[in-house]
Length: 319
Image: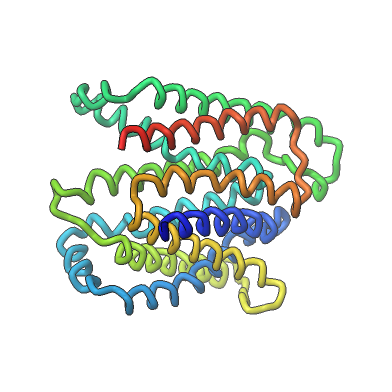
């Protein structure tokens, strides 16, 4: 049952991380998300080194990537997705953005559906069941309702000063978690299509984390250079006030590591169970961030959570 303990640890870590992302975000600081990402790179670097020391297959994986250069972009896909996730945390309540960033499974299913449909593989699209269709529809309804609510709340805050507004962008703010899901879904699809037995490419999870952490470090360096050269801002990540960002980066890193080891123990159940971490975020946001959503917002989130749960149940049944 080690995999279950690791999965529960991942749920808690990622739930706490979402709260820390929100705490470290500052709407009035245009470089807020860049600073957080630099910290993720700082923590990911030693984590990647430690995993590399522990890996017995790293050299084989390096040679595999060398022979299949198209795998390199996959290392930075999630890093790019997470950057848009940080933008979402900046403009939306944590209770809203966390479930929204858990719909990548539905987006991946939609992308794969049309991919196989347009490539003439209709027999694969026929295998999509009623549960998956209901789950996807529920998620779409939830996203639309959240967009309507964000727009309504934005109009209601029109008379407030800028520093007191929580919904400045209205429905437009949903574009950030949606882009996060699209990039992450494309990454999932790309891995599913290219890293398979048919292509004779099979990188162990621990090695893929090493490459992924390298991708995070590369993107983090680019963002630090962007602040230094383009924005003329000398960011010092080691100030006391940056501890929240340090905590968020640690949560992201160790959450990812526990997820990888949990998947190694039980690849069938880990993913659907882990998706429930958004519920932890919603509870913690109410306790520590004092977030109070409207009844209509909670109804919208219910559609999202039900859709995510149905996709998880479907995955377990199909497996």
